[in-house]
Image (cartoon, rainbow, N blue to C red):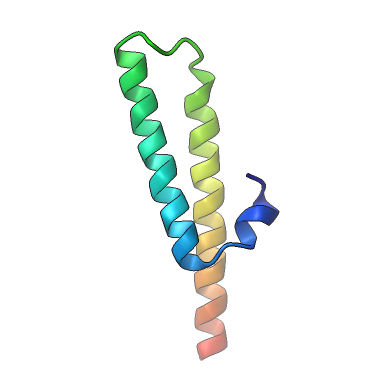
Length: 69
């Protein structure tokens, strides 16, 4: 998901997306521990996606607080 796609989501949808990505990261860790995962680059990709979503979420929260003030 690109940054532009993330910016179209609402705050609640972004929070849900972050939770889903964290669950996916945890599942990938379990797969690695049970030797079912061979491509470890998945971790880096998921972490970057979580960071992108957190950045957009922070931008939206800050923008909303500025508009309310």
